[in-house]
Length: 88
Image: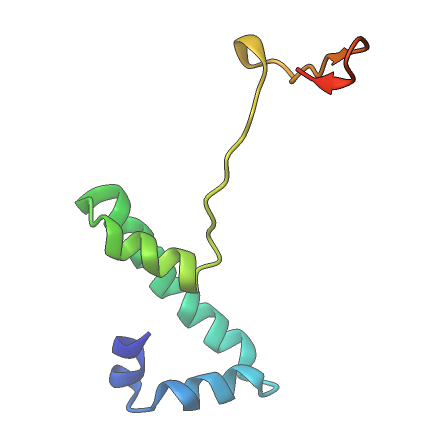
């Protein structure tokens, strides 16, 4: 975003202020989306690594998530042992 602001000759605070103003919000969102797309391309084609991942998580709304599945990718099965009331 700093590079975008430098190109436009404004500060990041000014960009943020324009993000809140009617008539400019979509323009700022489109600019941020373009920067995000460039960072995604770094990951895909240039293997940029940690820096690009950090940016996407902190500015692009990306998150790590863990998915759990059962056997062969099926749903998880929770079995209650009625003898001692603990989950297996």
